[in-house]
Length: 456
Ligand code: HEM
Image 1 (cartoon, rainbow, N blue to C red):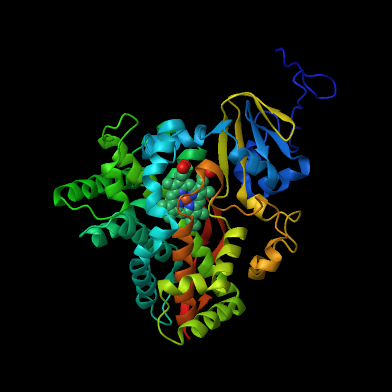
Image 2 (tube, rainbow, N blue to C red):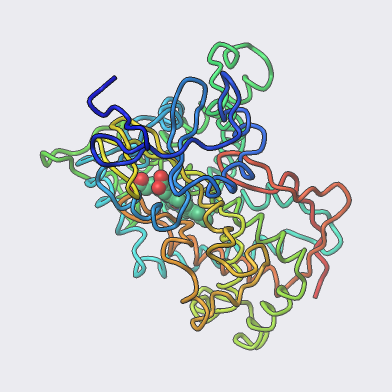
């Protein structure tokens, strides 16, 4: 027993309480089997057990935070950092020196380097590429065809990220290769993160060979992109130039490995998250024709029939609210983790140094305690007069604090534009074989989205 020995009423010597143990654990496996079997339902029910609860994952104790206020406190507190088993397996695959997994002074320096490319006033420079890609999507589709919503969403997301942030002559062809590589890597990565059976993934079976080939191609592509930019001698005003010119804490140029890992660390979260959100937006347009019609009406009242453009985006308030509501109900990033760097507290509960903490934006954003008609798809809840009802930190799909997604404006602009472009040109229907139930992976997305575009 340590000095923090537990008093009979659960209050410890420090005056802080031990969080209650969540119900439903089983001997040996604890709550792990529930997390694997139905993670979304499990996370959504945790608040019934307390504001902070303990979970047993085998022999390990993990803390789960269940209220909007405490997720905000966690994200904003300096007592926690990015770390833990999930991050370690990510680093093993994608590299150790990128912004998404760095902490402390290195993380602050890396954020300063990438931030200008994502600032609100930098976004208009990407407008013409976003427009081109949004319209290319609708031109590629033919009325009556069956469209694979998964690969189409992935393609447009990767192409926009690659073409906007890493400008280059061959980016068109490279973006196609990036799509294939990233799609395969993401499929295999989640499995490797939640079921870390190392040797199994080295067996020479087709799934492992595909994964290894895709991962190698991703790293090779990034090397090619960097080498080509260097050889060109050009310095366009983009993220890649910012990375190539970046200096470390001593004022020296950053190393090759860090440049490489940074490009990977930006492309990977930037494609899967946006792609999954586009899939849900297409699903919403198919499942809620009444909202699709309103989006179309809003766009047409603004454009009078000309193709919707980037400059229209900030005036498309209803379309924007459809995007926000889709992100509330199906947040791409459904689980987040932190590790305590010191003995600390959350909501009056003791959190020991080294503890892993999880929370779920999915659970928070669907909670009936925060939202009236919580499971209804209602874009109007984001109208200025109603948005006040939403508790602080109850809607945070891009997170908050020092790890907040740098790309919120960049993402919202493209998501709104794509939704507007698709809804004005087509009505969407799901076809036989489509399965829009939620597939849990690194992000949430529909299992298999097959759509028929019908000309308006
Ligand atoms: C971080 C969500 C798009 C790059 C994050 C985090 C969230 C998030 C929740 C915080 C993770 C944490 O707290 O642990 C999203 C969503 C997106 C999106 C929902 C779109 C719908 C993008 C795009 C890019 C991007 C397009 C880049 C092109 C990053 C990076 C980080 C990050 C680099 C790490 C930031 C850091 O650790 O300082 N994102 N993201 N994201 N996102 Fe995004």
